[in-house]
Image (tube, one colour):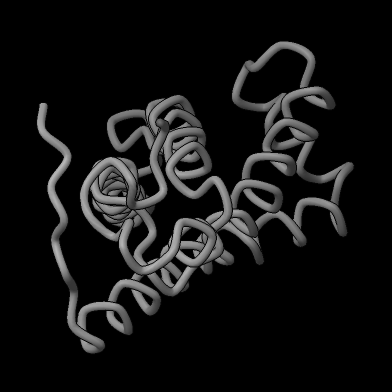
Length: 155
């Protein structure tokens, strides 16, 4: 595959930053909340039948808070987005079960399921196209490296 230079406009750079920040905002507050209510988080995870709920809660905090912050600042953002995509892909079937939910909760469970799939799609965009120039990854590679694989990706 050929690595081509693809210039971006200031508006595209700003929108990429905004999109990345909004995506990260799904995860960062959730990670903080899990720290604040660790016992409750572990109990909820245990209620879903997940083994070693305390370990699972710690991994969830690391994913949401750690990878969310990396995504926000745009450092190793493709890897962070990939990690979050795996995280969302793993937890979505466990945490959003419309058929097994009480009838009153089925609509909320369906909305959470589709929201998670939309977030997964956004994360895959970051994996594919990188975090943009207004990121640590984009800045560290210089203005000449804003296209395709150099846009925060592996060399």
